[in-house]
Length: 137
Picture 1: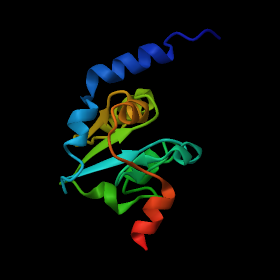
Picture 2: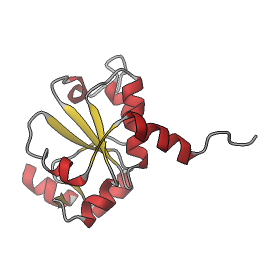
Picture 3: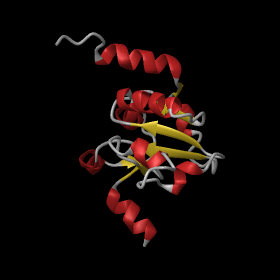
């Protein structure tokens, strides 16, 4: 069966419908208590580090963690006072994920253009999992 709408069309459609922040714009929100940066990458991708202070919500579980009716719901996502800014490796999965969350009814969601690769390229703050564990003590 031929694909009638490829990934590029899906990503382009999502990008046209979701709020997108540049790295600079997202970086400016790092210390805002009303913003939660969310890393949706696969657990194996975290060995390269993550955005400082990001919450890890793997893409495969995101909808389940967000939905209060799900047995996997995470209370963090019920906080309507927060804006959730998603990122992935390059900005494609996060655009699709932000679009899906909007389709679920969330209006407080956005994503970072270029994802973690662009974040690192621009020298924005990162931390390793070891550094994060050390901070938590």
